[in-house]
Image (tube, rainbow, N blue to C red; front, side):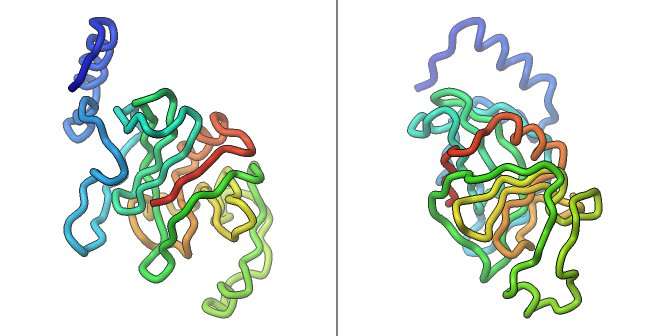
Length: 191
């Protein structure tokens, strides 16, 4: 059952009319479990700009929820509402799920590939200072004590794909927007 006040309904109508056809599902309440998914295949999620969407009211404002199936990150702004961002996720064999908290935030972070990654890719640099060529992009949000991060990317064409070693990739514009909204201690649920 959907109940909208006239003001919110007008806002939703004007928002929907100003968005491309693919973004007009704003009215549908979504949860990570109801995101589009095609059987056992891992669909390519076409990157699109962030948007305000209806969202499951079970998640508290300020939380981040990531649907790896849909390749979307949701920042919950209010009960039943979230900002949706397209993301890149871990490739087969590097998927993970669980709940973490953001333990650190960094602008234009440096990157030191972990030993496991160096073993798989000996051609990688052992250290890279922050900057536009850095694979972590413009911002990084560190997840617990793990090696995983939500970060920007110097490869925006990978957003919507499953190609990372488990990190959640965003466009630099989107990660800067998210970075401004969250703080250390923010809860992150990955499904």
